[in-house]
Length: 440
Image (cartoon, rainbow, N blue to C red; front, side):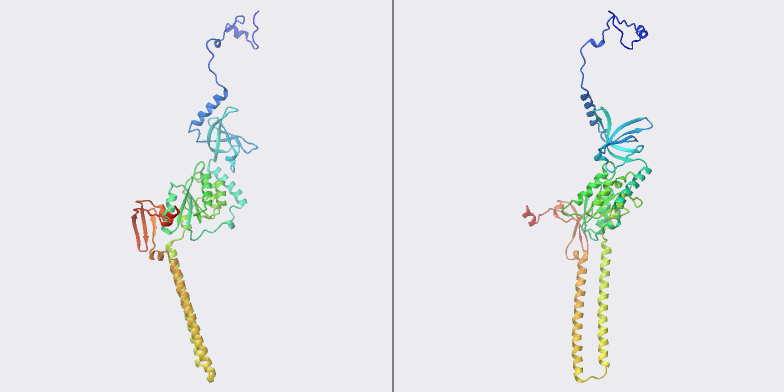
């Protein structure tokens, strides 16, 4: 019995191909061994491993337009990143733990950072996003204004909460990159103005992916110190484009500065650059070098101020002594030029005059003693007097003050500052103190 043609059979096409449905057609798959096959999951996981092993696809920046944006109930962002010129698109997933404080909307032109991955249940390629940056100065400004308004409404910029910078800090924490010129400039300014202070660097990224979290973590780390904690923090970065400085406009950095228990000086970019960090900080400096000048006093100015105070104290004491002498002379003249007194009254007056002379002498002696004590206290505050008593300041050649022998190694170049000059030397050996040996 002839076989029935299958549904959708085209007789003309079958005739052209000379197909005879009465004769069985042997499939080519019936010849030879069955080829090796793989489960779908194995192939999908293999493709995923290939993507994960490609370093370029695991650290990639992609520019495009946000399309088909959707926010899940759990707070995850899902969208397509499209390229209008090539009519191409990539699926993106921006999870809740990464997108806090970041706004993404349909039609935004953005720069995303992430890694390529395969979503196994659907076998679809997607970019796992960990950072989003708006593209263009206008978009950056709009994002800046949006965050500025929100933080201002919360009171992060309130002038009443800003704290004064300590006048004579002992330790300064610096949040910046260890490889940039900013750290070197701050060291130079501090060594020149007030070498008695010590600096503590909290290294961080200052631009690019992860920079905001790195800056915030460095600020929090300095606040968690329990020994040798800083008296003031400097959050600094050199100049750059608005995109380069954008990390200091991130909400995480602003909230870390706001939560800091240590006063913060913000010095980001040049004088014309103003960031969210500048508004939140207790004090803004136009440049990192200016921040160092704000943080420490100038020893030359302090010496001049002490000299002026000493001169003022001298004039005040001299004026008081002169006034007492004039008053005493006036009283004596009144006694001498007055009407004759009876002998008993004359004796009483003489006795009182002697008492007055003694009281005045005691008062003058007390004033001179206090004057001398004030002079000694003023001299004790002068750093140069400390050096004249035989003390010295030991520092490395880069100006960093050495406060402990444990920080020096053998054959290390050092500078020793005396009252009359500076001596350059090298360490021969380091001996531990008896107290340090007992602790061991």
